[in-house]
Every structure is written in C-alpha cells, then in structure tokens.
Image (cartoon, rainbow, N blue to C red):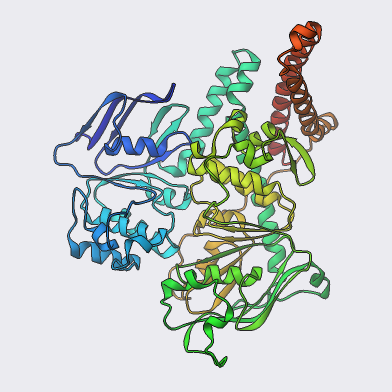
Amino acid sequence: MAAPILSFENLGLSQGTHWLFRNLDIFVGERDRLALIGRNGAGKTTLLKLIAGQIEPDEGNRSVRPGARVIMLEQDPDVSGFATLRDFALAGQFAPPAHEVDAIASQLGTDLNREAATASGGERRRAAIARALASEPDLLLLDEPTNHLDIDAIDWLEGWLSRYNGAFVVISHDRAFLTRLTRQTLWLDRGGIRRNEIGFGGFEEWMEAVYAEEARAAEKLDAKLKIEAHWLERGVTARRKRNQGRLAKLWEMRAQRAAMVGPQGVAKIAVASDDNKTKSVITAEHVTKSFPAPFASSEVEKHSAQPVSTSLDTNGVGLPGRTVIKDFSLRIQRGDRIGIVGGNGAGKTTLLKLLTGELAPDSGQVKQAKSLDMIFIDQQRSLMQPDKRVRDVLAEGGDWIDVRGVRKHVHGYLKEFLFDPSLAEARVGTLSGGERSRLLFAREFARESNLLVLDEPTNDLDLETLDLLQEVIADYEGTVLIVSHDRDFLDRTVTVTLGLDGSGTVDVIVGGYADWVAKRQPKNAPKQEKKAATPPPQKSAATKLSYKDQRDFDLIPQRIEEIEAAIARDEEALADPNLYSRDPKKFEALTKAIEKARAEKDAAEERWLELAEKAEGLGA
C-alpha cells in the first residue's frame, strides 16, 4: 500500500478552556475522495486548516509526503492587496501557469480582469477555484466549494473533480455534490473523528447505526444521563424519519399542482376553476423585463433593483438591450413552494423581485394579494450583528419569545433549532456561519407571515440543519419562494420549479430541479439518471397508535411547554440573592420543585420521542 499523501497522529487543538478535539488520527491516501461531515460548530473548517498547515495544533504530528502540493480552497478567499482577480489567481506558494488559470476561468465564466476590490463573492470564488485547480495539487482541501456558484459552474466543477488524479477532502452542504464525488467519509462528532470507506451516499445509514449502538449502550446507564447524552442525536434521527413522511406529502402536493397545469412549455400555470382565484397569492400576466445593452449578462443581477426607467431613454422609448424575462405568466397559489433556478445572470433575482413587487415590469402586470405578509431571508444575513447576544436577537434580551402567537421560553425555542440552551448568552460573533444562519431562521420563523422568501438559504448550513429547514418549510402554512443552486434541497422541497436559461424564457415545471433538467433534455438524448427525491415505498396496511399513545403524542408537547414555563418561573425566583437568608424553606421548596420538574420534562421528552418513532414505523 502506498504511503499516504498526508497524515496526522494524536491531533489536538484547545479552544479557550476546553479541547475542540483531541487524539485524532487522520490520513489521506492517493486518490482518496473524502467527505468531511459534522455539525456547525464542530470544527470542520478549523480541522481543514490544520490539515492544510495554516494552523498549528496544540498536540500531534503532521506529516506530508515530500514534494506533495497541498492546496486549500477557503470559503471566503482573501483578495485584499491585489489589483485584479488575475493578480490574485496567479499568486500563491504554488503560482499556477497563466494559461491554465485562463482556461479554467473561461470554463467557469468569470472575468479575471475584474477589480478585486469590487468583485462579488461568486467572482472571488471562481478566481480562487481557477488558482487552486491550476496549481496541479496532489491534495485539494475544499471548504464549501459550491457556495456562490451557479448550477452550470457546479456541474463543471463536478466533472473536473471526477477526472482529477489526486486526492481531495471536501466540506459541503450540497448532498448531490457529495453523493456523486466522494468515496470515503470522515465524521467529526463531539470532539472525535470516525472514518469509513463509504461515500456520502452511505453516510446517513452509517450514522443511524452508530447512534443506535450508542443508544443500546446508554440503556445500561442512568436514565437521566441517557436522555441528556442522546436527546439531540435521537431527536435528529426522528426528524430525519419524519422527513420521509413529508416527502410523501410533497409528492401529493406536486400531483395536485400538476392537475392545474396546462400543456408544458414556456408556460403559464392555468387555473382549473374560478374557485382557485380566491387562493391566489401572486399573479403575473405577460411580464417582460429588459436591461440596457451596457449591462453585461453578469451585471444583470447586480442592477436588477434599478427602477423600470433604467431600460428606457429620456423620451420613454425602449432602448435595445437584453431581455431577462419575456412574456412570463404564472398564478401562484396559497401553499405553493416555488423554486427558482438558473445560471448567474440568468435573471433569478430579477424574477424574484418582480414577483414580490420590489421591481416593476416593462410590460405586463404582477398583482400581489392585499393580505400578503412577507418574510425575506437573504444570503447576506445582515441582521446578525456580532456584538449582540443570542437572547438579544431572539427575544430582545428577555426570556420569552412569541412564536406565531404562542409564547415560548428562549431556552426551549433554541432547542427546537438544534442549539444548546446555554448558548442564549453567547455573542453572535462567536457562532459559526452556519449557526448564525440557523439563528436567523429561528428569529424570522417566529414571526407571523403568509409568504416566505429565501435567497440561497442553504449556504453555510450543515446537513442536519438542512433537514430542519426542510421540516420547517414543509410545515409552513403559507407560500414559499426559494432561489437556490442546491439541487437536492430543491428536489426535496418545492412543488413547482421556475427554470431560467438566460434567453428570457421561463420554464414552469411541476416538480424539482431534476424535473426541470429532464424537460430540457433533447428528445433523442439518452436519459440521465433522475436525482430527485423518490417517493417513499408504499407501506403495507398501516395501523394506528393506541388511544392512550395517540393522546400522549398529542398532549405531551403542550405539557413540556408548561413544565418549561414553570421551571423558568421558579429559576427566576431562585435567582434572588437574598431568598435563602430571608426564607430558607421556600428556597429548599423551589430547588426540589425545579429538580422534580426537570425529571418530569426529561421523561416526557423521551416518551414523546418514542411515540414519534413508533408513529413513523406504523405510518401514522
């Protein structure tokens, strides 16, 4: 067996007063295709930087094969100090040949002559990819390589990596990307690391097996310890199982929507009856939008927020330019999940702004329901000010938050979004990028609304948070508009896909990204394997929970909230520094009451989780 390209023995890194991880043994062999998996905050990016040699460990030895080139593609390439993207792409320890950089940049559709200081995140990312790939690496370390890339660029990168003769380690939230490319998995979990010679396609089954084994071992321990140690892991497991039921619901919704669609094509979605008009949220009729010729295609998205007069001269006469949206008609119904896909500059953001009323069309009209109450979550995450506490973001510094009319304690609500309740006092600046995104979702989803608009929502999220986001979207009672390049996420989430190819035509397809790709294939072309989420297998005669089990399943969540509220009240009273000296009996009574309530809450959570898993198994 050939010597590994790189290895670490007994790797350890401390973070403040504790170890982020310790006693890790890692090796990367020739032609390894490793997926690095772990929750947000587990230390994936830090570990990748340690492997790259950018950070010195507190413990352990790093060995690199003599002469091996180890190249890292970072999430946010630092182009400061460079006049142009070309200067950046041709720099570095292993400065690549200019002709190789130009060839890759051309394939990715980026202009390296762009000023570095004004380049967008996507342009910086493409320049960094061109530099990394052209440097002839023996080992590539890729941190979220698909962020800020459009679907065409992701497809090209997948093709390059599939032909690449070296090894790579990749962190990514893109399930389709990981499934197609990886053959081994490194799982960073609770300060330790596991390796398995399977690609990401087998990871979830492996993870379930590991957690099941841990759960069996934990049954020998104290029940309370078992619940505290495994609630999050088993909760995520149950969530993933529940998502299978939601996939079945998604397929039912797609079937219902297909019944309302006329002949496929450029399409408008026709309405089956006048009754549906009362359900309309947004109606677009023969909408066209153009931009003046001086705007290159890559600039269309940047300038799409300009008023309609930008495409007219001073006399109101239309200037010749590029038509981004052409004769587009669509009626969006209450409860629709609309996905918008296409390459950079194809008009995704322009279409989104037309539908939401932020941008006026040149011709045609867009009508929004008068009762529209919108939540817009963009990829800038601008609300996450680093000096604020998590509690400040969620509850304006208080202990309680109103979640769509229901009052919840901050600690309990944080748990719903996979946070440790102790993070309520943490500063936003100490959270990872994915944790900040999850916190923003928690804040925004608490508001009353009937239209949810998500612009690249999957950037910086780990896989378990993506499962949570899919669950929240599936349970959302309003309408959802999603702009995303995450193919698997769209296949698991949307009922209708609006596909833009840059010509001005908007394809309206019932289904997800894979359905749009299938529609675009020439009739005589060989069919590609469909990557859409397949409907769950039909269950045999489903049985129901018993009356007692069903009653517990329905009532326990409310009971848990009541217990959490009681604990919060008693803890607030116990926080009085003079209570013990003033009334020691009350102090003792409150202490015992809190202990008893916590035990009851733990038992209720465990009971509900068992019932949730049982209900899924029965098809209830």
